[in-house]
Every structure is written in C-alpha cells, then in structure tokens.
Length: 170
Image (cartoon, rainbow, N blue to C red; front, side):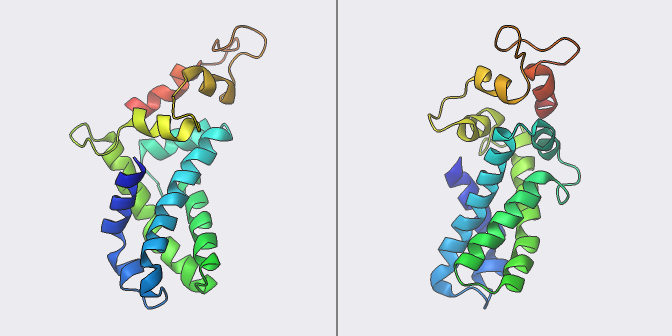
C-alpha cells in the first residue's frame, strides 16, 4: 500500500515538488516520501486516537480539505519540509497545493471497485498496527467497545464497530 501511495504522490506532485525551485532537486524524492508518509501517519493517527468519525468522513469523500486526515497530513508534511530546510511559507503553500488532492485521489481509488491499487482492507491492515495483522478486536477497544462486557460487544444504546465502519463500505 505504501508503495502505491508513493506512486500516487509522484504522479500528483510534478509541478508542486519536482518543478518547484523552493525544493532542491536532490530533495525531491525525500519530499515525495514525506508527503506519502504524512498521509499514512495521519490515517494511523486518526485510527489510534479513536477518531472513527474523522476516518469515516475521510473515506466517504465530500469535503476532503476540511477533514481531519487532510489537516493532520498537511501539518505533518509542513513539519517534514521545514525539517528539510524548506522555508515555512513555501512548505505551507506546497502542502496546501498537494495534500488535499492526493488524499482525494487516494480515497477515490480506495472506493473504486474497478481500481485494485488500494482496498479498504489493506488500508486498515496497514494502519491498524505494527504486526501488520488486522484484528477487528483491536479496533473495537479503540472505538468504544464495551468496557463492562465482553470484548467487541457494544455498550447498550451504542452501535458496534461494524455499525461504525459500515459507512466505509457504502
């Protein structure tokens, strides 16, 4: 998945990164990896913090620019570019010009049944943990599973993890 995300970033950033005089040519590849890494880190952060709403909203599409995923990814990308010695104003402009578009393309590809470059199961597997294994029970605890009853059961009056995630698959 990360390789596909890097490729998507490369395809989407020719003007903003490669042809940008604010980014030295020898740092183009690092900037591309910083962009894809920032998006991946943002998705992982949304999942680990239990912000299921932000994650579901991102994968539903719509207003991508205002999504928590885009905001976190943009912030992380700005920090990484600044760490590479890129002027802060230039870094902010670059992030604003590329991150929303890349996230939008990523989401569209994930939701497109005719595009196998990304699938929701692979995305969730990659962002859910270091062991690379997607465990629904791991997510249940993060998203407010029953703390009093059996693991994976919803609290009374609340939807379970499947109900919360079903918007991802519509």
